[in-house]
Amino acid sequence: MIIYALSGPSGTGKSTSALSFAYEKNIPAIIDDGLLIVRGKKVAGTSAKFEKNYITAVKRATFHFEEHKKEVQEAIKIYNLSKILIIGTSPKMVKRICSTLELGEIDHLIDVSEIRSSREIKMALYVRLTQGKHVIPIPHKQVEQSFFKRLIKQGMKIFSQKEEVIGETTVVYPDFDSNSIQISKKVLTSIAAYECEQPLEVKQCQQVNVQMTALPTVDLTVSLHHPLQRTLQDIGEDIQSRVQQAFHNYLHLELHSIHIHFVK
Image 1: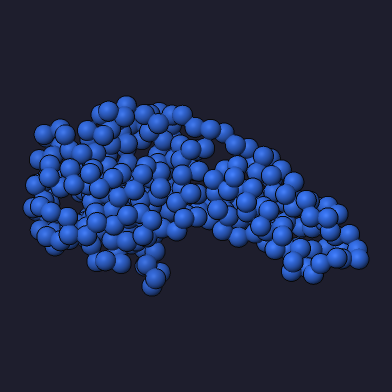
Image 2 (image 1 turned 180 degrees about the vertical axis):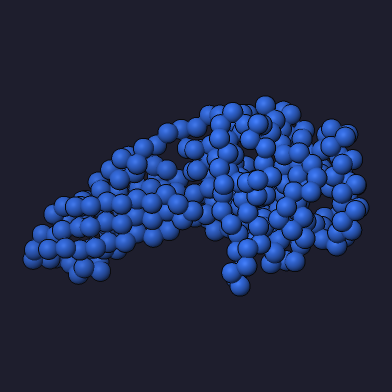
């Protein structure tokens, strides 16, 4: 069996990217947070997300409990897997999982930064920090609501380049990770509007729309003083640079795009 391992800190979007990565590499199985997932469906194990505290969550994710370990080992044998992808928060963790499950040495060790852009990683960390969302790469119907105090939500379907559905994700709010920082939409728009109005040519930032999705974007509608001392391109690039730098400084985020609409 060929063993792939994907590592990266908590909240960087490993589980979100795992299904697509596995599909691209023709890897039929994933081990993620205590679950064995085969072709996008859970077939064995129990998710560490179900645990009530970090200590037992880590033990669950690394197959510390004998019954849990044996269940997953048996399933791996039954499915006769040719390849498997193991997900963990560090190279040490994925190696520990391999050793515990007696799978052998890792053949390919990949860091999350190799398959996700810096913007995607920072956005995923922002969502974890402000919303407390965790992702399980299995369908909503396979996740038991009774494990969570807060509602679970259907995530998104993962498509191949041929528009085939290759898996689904589920968003959960584990009991052991209940702390989050609330940042209102008004704060985000205020940051963008303030920086937009700093160039001397700008009369007013008339409208701001901030979308904090997988790749965050800002749309600005701007009126200018005339006559202009610089070209529209120079003014636009100045505004984009200021807004981008502010989001990086205040929120540690890289905006995917900043659209500027100039009006009279």
